[in-house]
Image 1 (cartoon, rainbow, N blue to C red):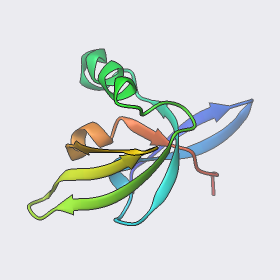
Image 2 (cartoon, rainbow, N blue to C red):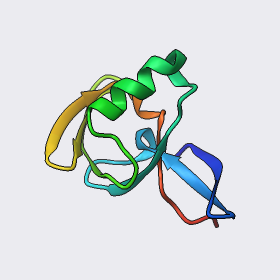
Image 3 (cartoon, helix red, strand yellow):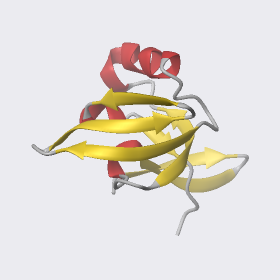
Length: 95
């Protein structure tokens, strides 16, 4: 699972990306990596509902290299490429 460090309320936490989830796993969106996709990807992901504190669940991975991913975000189901899912950082405690 891909992890990136981030600071929340003065505490360093580790964040996993949406691409690192397995089918059936749920998580909470911590933030979107605005540097991914030249900045336009972050805007598009937010428009689809990937906003801070939104609950996500990975429903399905495609058979060839895991693309596309079927993701439930709140009450909507969307399809994302794995590369796009890397920009969605999930809340997780550091170990």
